[in-house]
Image 1 (cartoon, rainbow, N blue to C red):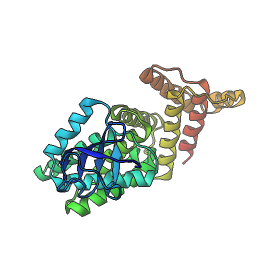
Image 2: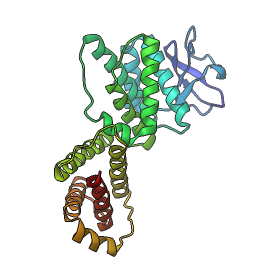
Image 3: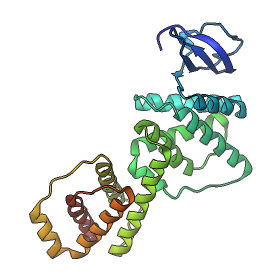
Image 4: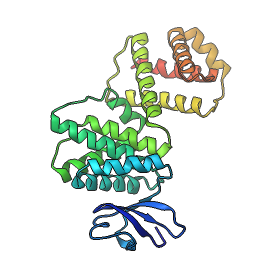
Length: 279
């Protein structure tokens, strides 16, 4: 946040567009930052909460339009939420979160006012897949509910979690949602194939989700794991149901991503499935 910033345009009391020392446009956020200010004024460094640059002109325009549509108190609270996320993670976030999360929260508040309830079918999976982001999302929803004196439902925690993870991993939200959908499909197949019902809030369920998530991550990053031939022979002979089911799941993953999956993944997945049948 070092350097001098000269105001180019005041968007609202808390957000301004300013030029840095090399005349790049920056979006700067801070409580009361734009109040009473005009073009050409310098910004007091102490008032800056967030500073980011939307290089894409279309994204800049989208953000400006959002500010025109959202009440200042709501906008201030959402900015506080993004500051909270940044501080909790202490990592650089993709700057598109300022558009994506702002738009999502504003729309969620509008739905709440209209009495429209949207349930989150991936809430449990999301919590297991991204526990750190989920915990921060809980804090975000609590902050919003407290500051605006509203009651956004628990389902929103899952949606906010995906936005946080998307900004953290620099992946489009559509891909994050796609992963969650695939994960849910795989778990449904496991429950059907093994004729078991896994308690969603159990440690057993959490371990399964984490194992599957690691499989997906390794596939997407083209990573491999070593194959133990003794395990293969044992699993084929002793646990054919789990072995065959594991391969069915691997084929679904291959088809979904159109990427190769190491044979070893089926072996270790079969071992995990066997543990499920023993519970």
